[in-house]
View 1 (cartoon, helix red, strand yellow):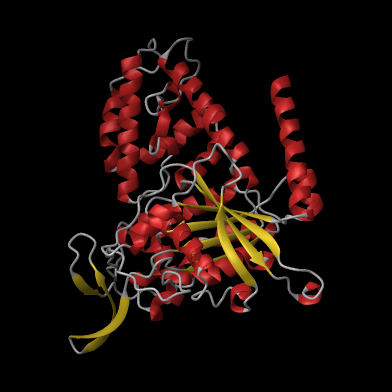
View 2 (cartoon, rainbow, N blue to C red; view 1 turned 90 degrees about the vertical axis):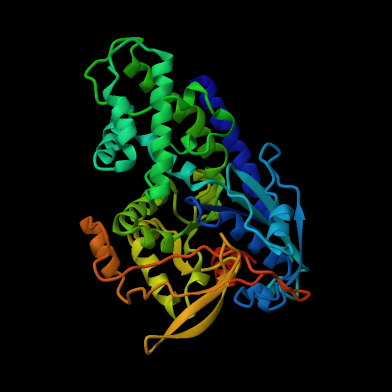
Length: 470
């Protein structure tokens, strides 16, 4: 306890020092980028950095449009123990003669982009350019969902998880393994490992099937913790008073160790220091998978926001209470899979999906927004005649074959309630529509000097997230 208090005091003093330094000298914007699997975090960061360094396509970023950003350059990130985001490799994958999508986020990483910016307003003639540091922190969204576990006991987590498993075909194998064990029997390590492996298999299958409530997140992305006791537990039916050294007691102990040794350090060392956040969402993928996936994603967005400490980051607030996330952007990715005429509908769906989460953040004083974006545009638009009607299509190269193809995904509804209604009601499928999704490969790029990669509304996202600090 004394060690924990001392550690907290040291971190508070360091936070105060950082806050004073940032306020009086070179300001730092710490931007968190997260999202659930296949939402495009790596591409988002790569394209954002490339377009901040070559700003020809950033007309909606006021400081770029006004020509006040004089230079942008990469520097070593301030956290020596955090891996660097491999920007050069990822950009090379997207700009090669035969481009391909970079590898997905598997762990936390960081990148510092420093901008030399001329001030505006009354200070423009009195001060020279100043340096603003943008620290971009990339972390898996699965880890973010784990923060909700901090307020749950093992019994609560097990009860909620097992209730969700009852009607999911992806959990059949785990239910069978669970039925073969006695929770109050003496701990047998092979049995514990068999339960953990089967539960991990379920989590991976559930994520592929479109479910988003896949915690603990490190079971999906274990890294160097793979095989350790802290990742060798699983939910069990409630037991009134399991005996010492029983399977149930050991599962509870390992669950608590997971929270204290994995989840809390992530929150303390990384997440609690973020003051701007973008949450990337593959809304089109969820719509394609059906109403249950949409409802599950809506719940996940609410859980994700519950992990934030939204509010304003005034100088005294940061000194006394620590950082708070003051701007949160929910971005529906892959907007280039739709004709631009459907983008307002996708944005409206995104706003409806995140309504509960955004209301809570705004009540706490945070500024929130929802956008439909494509960090890297992989398609072009065209019209095709089909059965006497004109269809607004997109054309690109298919990811699996490389062949060029025109694609019509279907019409999204003007009223988002036509999607959210069946989703909340637990419908198995959409009654009057069939929403398609296609995977496109990145298009070969021919960039003019001063232009970053082509995108859709990435500049508007940047203006919302960091424009007020430039």
